[in-house]
Image (cartoon, rainbow over all chains, first blue to last red; front, top):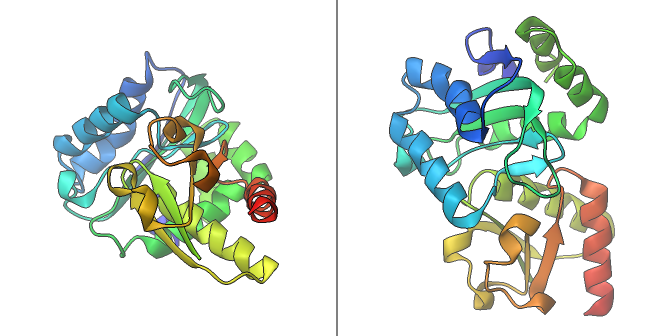
Length: 147
Length: 90
């Protein structure tokens, strides 16, 4: 079911980025293009991060930036960016981050199924390792298609 | 007992933590009401126990004895250990 949201359009890889903000911007680009979010949503994530810290870094190497529906979400969306060389998010325990999954929830309930599947994927260490070692988005999608 | 999972926005990572808390409680056969919220609206009187990441704990204003701090949101075994430890203390 994740492949409804994570496709060749929304899953990208890059060798390296300057900083966490650039990583989020690149990750969010496909959702801006398909009008799932407005640029306000990205600003909201930056602001919240700067005021309370990297609340969306989930585990070693994995981040799931997100803000609230009213902060610029037009429709439910998900995008993924693999930063092959890693990038720091100022998360003491979990840096460097390789896998960034941007979540745009359009209300507080419609993304439950999506989030359940994502949590299942994130808990599968081997599959996550395969994704982190992927050379291109096709290799990532081969794993995603099983969830 | 009321347990609240907390994150920055109250609907992404806190939601994942809530799902994991429910799984652990079921396994441990413990009954509790589990909810999730954003940091700004989580106040100490709203629940008996708050679960959040280390990055948030310092600025949360939740007393230490009502707090379970996670390093890794996805690691359900870590969550179970910390919840058991908390329940044994309580």
